[in-house]
Image (cartoon, rainbow, N blue to C red; front, side, top):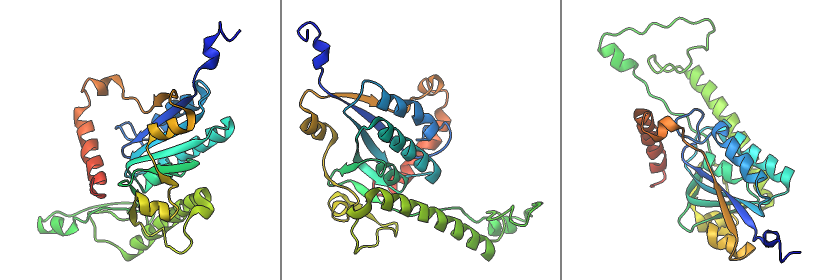
Length: 265
């Protein structure tokens, strides 16, 4: 019977999910749970893959979107009983590393940048400039904290305390995710949650990754030279593809390049 049904002897397949770029909500080309959900679902459900590989190259971004994407991957991995292996390319930092923790194993290149397990909020203050120009800022609110950290008004100590508290709570959530997913693999004699970054070999020594390796040769080693790859990732809309959103995409590119530049990339 197998002689007449050669498809029964098909080599195993690996679903590859591309997670490249900034993590952000919205339709400006960033990684979000909404944009990735259909492709992630297909990766786990189509063709019974032997494994799902995450190809990660992200400097981070929204903690909420990082959490949602990672949770979706874990939920499907457990539902379908499919192993997940993350392969870090240039960088998996901050939210990018959060995505990597969704995998059962994390591999990286020797020059990959990993870590930055922290939270950052950046803004600016323009009240001095406005005053020099003779411009008066007028804001009316109901609720004493509604205008918290208004960049056009002098910074208030109580506002700084509030934002620091929020950042601290998000940081605790991030730390809990890393600790829950990496567990006993993490080095016990090192503070891994300061926002510091490391290259591949040091990240391996600290237990942040499991080893050094690249996607195709590693998958061939595990599943044979004839293993098939199916690639999934966010898709751009028609208007974006034909250039109707050039200005929006340019702004996104500038923001993304600035984020990667923080890690020397």
